[in-house]
Length: 157
Image (cartoon, rainbow, N blue to C red; front, side, top):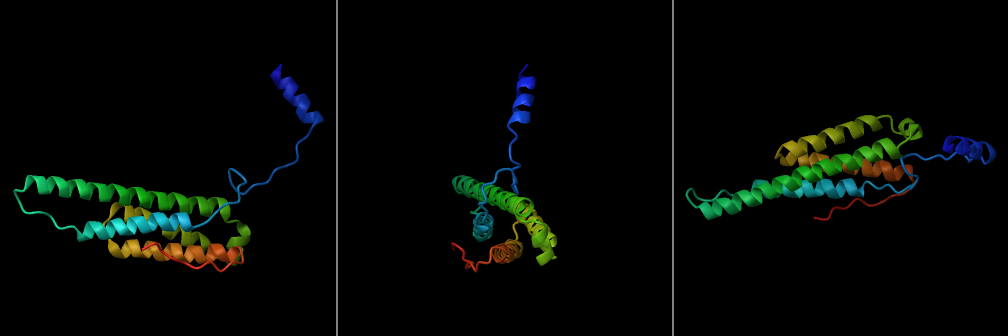
């Protein structure tokens, strides 16, 4: 019965076709969220590399060291994953064929950035974390160029 009522409603009151480039037509995109997450992963990478293991036999110092190290690792992995998720949303929901025509290496740019997110997640490698920031900076420039805007790149640290 409900099916018949809905069919009658659709026939008598047709809806206009809605168009959206993503799951919801919010139109709010910004690569800044990916930058912030990647910058946090970079910061954690630096902190991990700067840690010095305590002297052998100091159980309390080792407990504190392991606690801090595990927290830095968890944050680094979480933020690298978040950066990847933010980039993938931008790539798959914002960019359209017209952008690909203007930026032929767009897919490769995003592919490489997403792969760097995975690398930063599983490694403790400062050059790779810095490469990720550079890749996101390139995406930032392309993204704002599609909007005809010159938005200054900055980092929090």
